[in-house]
Length: 409
Ligand SMILES: Cc1cc2nc3c(=O)[nH]c(=O)nc-3n(C[C@H](O)[C@H](O)[C@H](O)COP(=O)(O)OP(=O)(O)OC[C@H]3O[C@@H](n4cnc5c(N)ncnc54)[C@H](O)[C@@H]3O)c2cc1C
Image 1 (cartoon, rainbow, N blue to C red):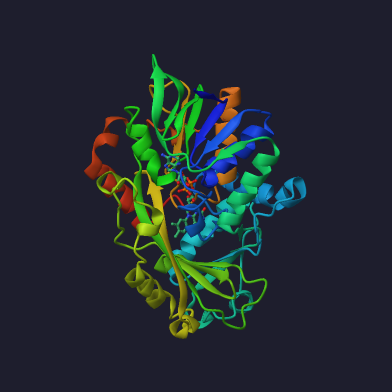
Image 2 (cartoon, rainbow, N blue to C red):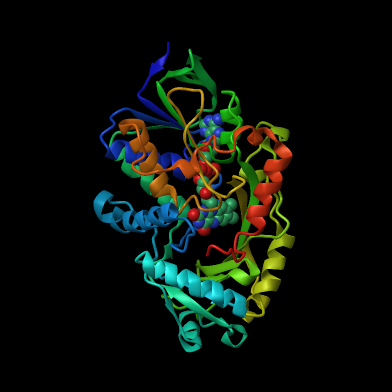
């Protein structure tokens, strides 16, 4: 006997859960999240550092992050659930004059866009991040309203608020495909039976590519391994410690559990082709990239000498998905009425989750996302999306240059 439902969301990571929350908030009564695991947000989402930073080269993404900061700050009062937001700012550190020039352009543009951003003295940098050896630093600027959340807590906050608004969340339900009639979605096939629905959204993180290919559409997204580490606790980290981005060495650092959490965009990225992996390949199967994080530590130690002697308490690693241009893939899936796709998170899916959920909810209920998202159109790469070698090369290049100085910045 077929089960009936309104909108089906495939994947209970932070994108699916935010979408569920926003759909319910807009008044949609019948929403069901299908998650194959026995718990929510247990794949890419909990690996994240949770940084929510407003310095973006795209105006759409800037508005998206500002919405996230606004939503995360009012979430506890509005819903009773805390996302773990700490709004202690971002300190952008430059090690070279060229980087300072790029920062000057960023500060100027940020101010034009209404973001608070100010250059800070070496003394102020030392106050903000006492372990930073400012004698090695060219300069920097501070974005006071930036912050970070606890990613799994944030995802679970969306889930709890969505449940309170009537969303059904079904665990241990692996979606195996779509049922179509004349290119219109009729519902999803799962290992536990068919679920009827004429609107479905794939928010399956790195697995979205596999799902969308089953409908005949190749999404131009490449899963790439991404990693971070957390040290043992150490004294002297102040409550107000910001996120520190040392973009010249492609690293960031923030406080976590009494120690330092740091992450790294490595110059030689490692793609993971899920098609060639066993069907049950999961985030937990990725080996801790100890050598990569040792390199990150080597790069950070001249400016954060304290890291040299601090043991690593925990490694975290997952797959972030990158499109060749580093922008999201969001919107109606070409050729299938009623199917939406959201992937290509570009290591920015926690910060972008609020806007992603709102865009998708509006799109499904009102027929448009509320702003021009043509830059994120899933079909924007045309036939080239099917060229796996090209896709991989371009996506890896974007990843490796994540913090490179770009002329537009
Ligand atoms: C080390 C690291 C650091 C990061 N740091 C940051 C950061 O500082 N800031 C930031 O914004 N982002 C960061 N990210 C990126 C962020 O984690 C992702 O963008 C985000 O978690 C993507 O969420 P998602 O919901 O799309 O995917 P996921 O969390 O992977 O969720 C997808 C869900 O779909 C489910 N699923 C898959 N296939 C099926 C199926 N067939 N049927 C049913 N369910 C299915 C999975 O089980 C999973 O629960 C980081 C990522 C990593 C790895």
